[in-house]
Image (cartoon, rainbow, N blue to C red; front, side, top):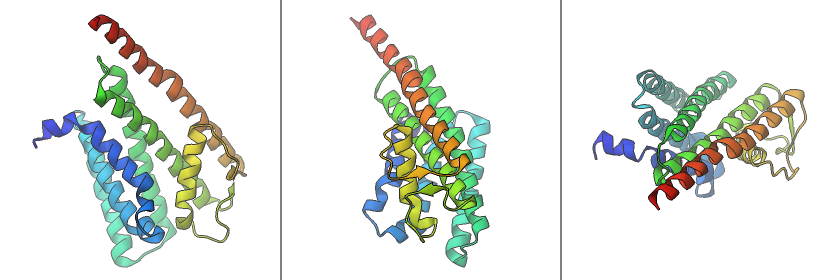
Length: 223
């Protein structure tokens, strides 16, 4: 498969690697997934993100740099068995930068698509899931910097053991479901929660609406 063909399926590759990150913990022991497998899946996701960036020189170079930085952090932590909090900050920063860039790029490509097809639908879903992961890294950073910023996390557990809970909280916030089992306590946690709840609504109301409008318009033209 040549690279151009890979680019054709860029959104599908990115979307399914995201799904593996979100639901892979169901197939593996929690600690094994959090410490090793999730990092490998994130590297795969960054690689698929490079395919999305491939026609934009500056962003593609940044994604390559972020990939090798993430790989270095993973190897340093895995080989050296290092659990330094500084490493967690570096790791979160790398992923935060990547998912910020990739979210905007996906939205740009979906927004500029002239025709709505299966690829655009996968792009639309990928953008939404990426915002949720972006929210997770923000909430993770808040809890890392100021423990007990969220009520409802596992008491006495390490931040690693609460990864699944924070991912869950991010998407529940994005979808504005709000079961109330996890709630923000600190001011910054509350503001971040408000921000990502609004982002979820803006995405649905603006980006999704534009895609639906294009689909309806092209359907009428075909008739």
